[in-house]
Image 1 (tube, one colour):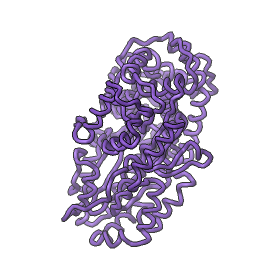
Image 2 (cartoon, helix red, strand yellow):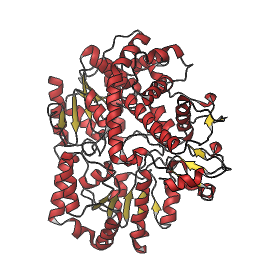
Image 3 (cartoon, helix red, strand yellow):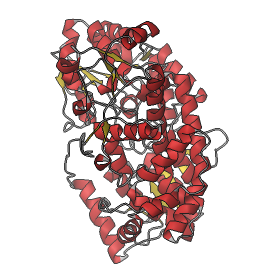
Length: 602
């Protein structure tokens, strides 16, 4: 954060300061002293450009965990207030009569997400303008603006520089500021993950062939259809058999909307009767009017047609782990089936941080739209009839980790977050600090262990330049490719290290792999009923509060990891934790078949 003394010094300069709002260097004026709107505006790989410049970096107001949580709660309340109004307006626009639950399924995830993004950008920019009222900058021309096609397109656009620069431009216009404009087209594919083609073979090919033939020829009358279940093909074949064909998957090609001319009249109608209470909410209305994805307005009819073509069957139940956010035809199908046929909607946990972190918008949304929600072992007080502890589908059927003979080395698994915060949680909002902890961990290790690090980054770099950073901290580290399956890599290494709360560390603990964890508890806020489980991991020396302690422990135990890991107290803590957050066992298949037969019978 820039101090008042620094601000006074900068304001005293004869040249006006220039606000850098994105990492798009075409939108910088380096002839002026620079104020960077956040660390994310300076690409690590471009240090030779910005290190020698006269500039200061601002912190975001929501980097404080307390303010971030307040912001998330406020946006959740605003979404709930606006959803019924938007539902009524969308019905009028499209000549529909759908209830609020239908529209919650179709629009709810984007609504909370989009308002949260708008709020983060608004508070960050207005704080900078308040501290430095004489700032100048470059904005985008209206010709450069883009409207997301759907939720996935919105997600992709948020990863890049130009769409975020567009949002900042819209805020400045809303506040009455006019600055010189430049044209820089937005690129939704600016940071796309590498594409690895799906290869259908073995149990997966058998599952797909069986399912498609069954639905086409009506060989069975499925009562529950699954989509993106997050379970292995072999496990799903087992479910099909144990339920007599009552539970089977439905496969559908991915759908992307096509861009259409903007329907300005319909977009005006969308925001009718929204009652903004302050200047941010007035901006949020304008943001909704322009930024609502086209699948809700211009592409809605196409969405309905695509849904009916891909999902012609209306079963008694629909179950999915991760199709509730991005799969627009699936969302319409599920919502219509529930509304018109009374189809049960069954949700399944698909991420390791579910049930643990205090604010989890996806978990909250998925539970809200489900008739029943199955977790990896945890329950939710007051919702015992709806939130059902079950075996973790992602882990079902897996065996314990068996080390490859002669296996050695340390598997370090990292994660990513959008450089422009996409969610109102402290971890995302303080991601630069997360990167600094990786550096601290690496530098605390002796040279011999640094050379044994196999680091596995997320498939998407998102402009954080992970590899150049790590090559500077630890040139001898081996960067693993995602073509190597995670479980294969886990078996090959002697010990697993994780610096964030997510899925892979639960996979490692469930596989009984020697594990060390560390993360910043200030930025990873746990819910009250989860704290004791993590404190138990900390008490037995699995989880640490700082990277240096984890690195020193790794140095001490590396040569005899197995003896350390097999200590009774450590094994008991691991098993107790997994029963709550990553439940596995030989009875997983029969347990799931029993759960779903019960749903079919009711």
